[in-house]
Length: 213
Image (cartoon, rainbow, N blue to C red; front, side, top):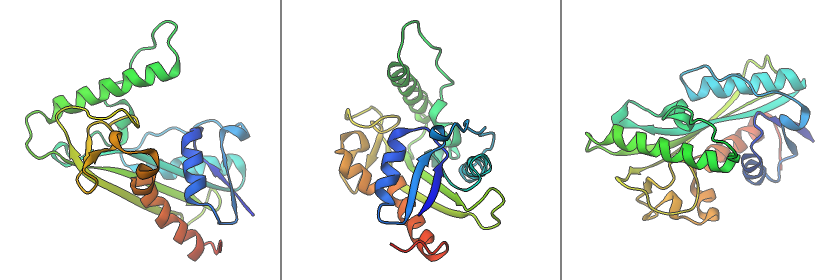
């Protein structure tokens, strides 16, 4: 059984990846559970940030690690918000007595407003969510596994739906006839960018790391 350290403290991301990689002989644990601090993400690309996070977790844990870097890319904006998707509007200030969830909702609203303003002059509203997964056997692994999943759609002019988070209310998926925020969680998880990158990574873990189910 391989222990694979997830370079994240996000419980939802852990649960999602555990389900997507279920059946393989590995144990996925968060870096936080091992007392590992989060890595810096100074780079301009998803792959560089994911690799930096994976190598950091691998070095600190002394073993294999997995990292994800994801966001929204809009063609008309040259790929923005890109790696700063989570704080496209700049980080909102902490309000007195505000819990983490309330702050996240305000951050999401600010990011969505900034995106709509940036896209206002454009007629091309095509975009895609992207998830880049990187796995390394150790910190100096010369052959990291890299899996990229893209989920295309169109950015609406106003939000729709109450599920999900982030840009989900603005991202319309033509093949499903709904925004991501209008999809049930199980439907989203079957079609999402992370589901697509995890499917690719799963096959790589079997082929390159010989982790047969």
